[in-house]
Image (cartoon, rainbow, N blue to C red):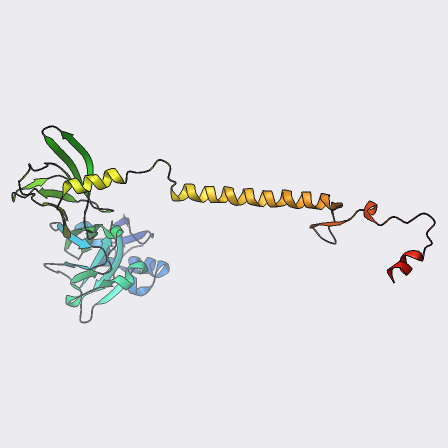
Length: 326
């Protein structure tokens, strides 16, 4: 194709996130639009020039953003050049927004549609109902700039649990090793206050039992992550270790999976026992078990053996049996 004579236009093959091959003609956009109309709707085509300019944009400074599961987070663009912005997650475009009041979003991933909002006439992006898999890099591209936000999503912590790892007693006294843990959480830091106001880092601590007459100072464990923190106070390490000793894990107990297997085995044994008893009962009554033809039934039944029929008395007439029944 020749535009306006002279040298033929330069064609550049661009990698594009819509799984389409786009050719850009430097001297004009006619070929771009004709290709676009074939592969996708017009509203998305109008935003293609913005998305194809990513090679000529300047990278802005990245920003670290912290979010909490179930809550929302907002990415703010400090400066907005142009009339539209394209937002991508892990280099896949999820939405483009035309700046205005109200802003006009075009979604390329409908999974985000219920959770995205565009405050400040579209110059910001809000993600609600955050999930753990929302963590990652979000990029905002305009005609002249590109800004990246790295989102880290964490769960709010529950109250930490304190357990006794070891009790070591001698003539000089007792020492207790305590552990502080939080269930199902990541990036958690722990610290202990042993009563002197100084926090000791780490999830475990070794404390000495106070001598007779000395005051027992409370112990406090603090668990913290980037979005929350919780404390647990221990009054008596000896009581915690005594409870652990009194209720150790039993080697004779069954897990839920083992209990299910045991129950199934017992039920199977009971069914087998019932079948055996049934067969013995049939034989004791003079029954035999046979299988009916498939056209009639598929189950087994019992019937009387011929040998079990009442025997005729010698010299008895054919009608005697009926007369006796009368």
